[in-house]
Image 1: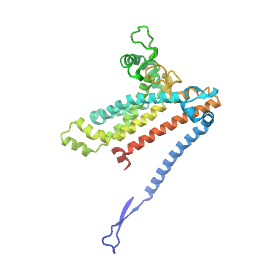
Image 2: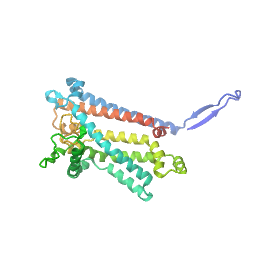
Image 3: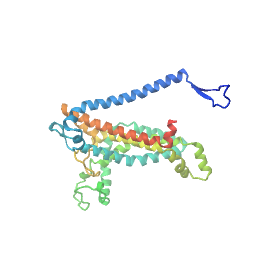
Image 4: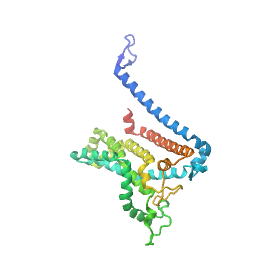
Length: 337
C-alpha cells in the first residue's frame, strides 16, 4: 500500500489531497481477512440457530421464563429448568477465576520481568504444555489426588470462616469428632480449584505476551527516574497490560463456564440452588448435558439443547463484555491501531 500526495498547481494554499494506492497483494489479503471474519460470524450464528431449533420444542412447552427459573430437571414429566445448574455453573467459574487470575498474573510477571534469560523459554514451554493436558487428566487428578488433601482445607475454612454465608456448611459441627468428612467432597470449591489449574496457563500466556510488549522507552524512563524493578512494573507494565489482564481473565472465564469432563468427574450432581461452595454437591450446564445425553428421550434431548443454548448465550455475553472493556484500555487500543 502506497500513499501519494496530489497538489494542484493553481492552488498554492490549498492542502494536498492524499490518495491511497492499494496493491494487488493488499487487496487479496484484505479480501481473505474479511472472508475469514464473515465465516467465523456465520459459523457462530449457525451454532446458535441450531441450538435454538433443536431446543425450541422444550422452550415452547415450558416457556422461557419457567425454563430459566425452575430448579428441577425432569423434562419427561414437564418440570425442568436451568436455574440451579446455571447458578452452580457461575459459582464454579467464579471460584476458578478467583484462584487462577492472581496465580496467572504472578506467573506472567515473573516470566516476563524477573526470570533469568536462560530459564525463560523453559518456563514458557512448561506453562504452554500445561494448557495441552487433556481435561480428563485434570479430572482424574482432582478426584484421586487433590480432593483428599483439599478436604482438610475446606474443614478449616468452614470452621473459622463460617460467618461468611457462602462458606458455611450445613450440618457441620467442628466439635464433633465423629463427623464424616464426606460433607466436603465433590463440592463447588474442589471443582473450581481443578478448573482454575486448567485455565491458568491460557490466562498466563495472554498476560505474558501483553506484558512483554510494554514500551521499552517508558521502561527505561522509569529506571532513569530512579524506580526499582517493581516500581517500573507497577507504573509501566501493569497499566499497559490492563487490557491483556482483562481479556485473558474473560477468556479463562469462558473456558471455565464450559468445562465439562473435569467437572463431571468431580461433582456430585444436585438440582437445587446451593450457594455453599464448600458443601458436597454441585452441578453445571455442561456436566448436565454430559450426564443426561445418553439416556435422554426426544423431548429430553430438546431440553438439553435448550440448556446448551443458555450456556452459548452466556459465553457470548462474557466475550462481548470483555471485548468492549479491552477496547477502552491502552494495550487494547494499541493492538487495534
